[in-house]
Length: 109
Image 1 (cartoon, helix red, strand yellow):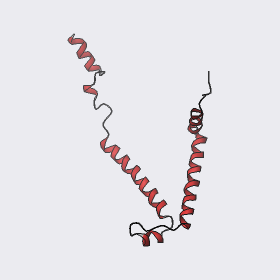
Image 2 (cartoon, rainbow, N blue to C red):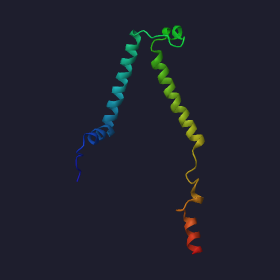
Image 3 (cartoon, rainbow, N blue to C red):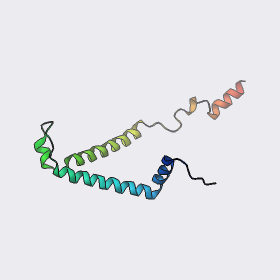
Image 4 (cartoon, rainbow, N blue to C red):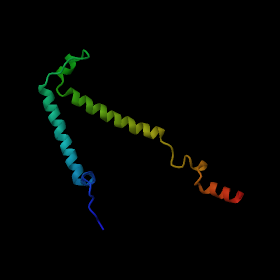
């Protein structure tokens, strides 16, 4: 009963979901990042914000800056999740499907 999906997108997503597909995506992204850093070493950057002297001295500055900011974004999001996350039964006393609420409704009728 294991039918193959007819649609191309379905087949593509099944391949990506496999462990081999995840490894391939990681390798492709690493190669793409390496190529962008290598290209960035040879292309001159324009000074739009008056930081040209600082940026020009650091090879791969924009790649490093982007990676650091993305990593900080993930770390801050995890910290905010711990601070803002409610307990699993936070709404339980007031929900309709709560066992105690069901007993109260059944006993009142």
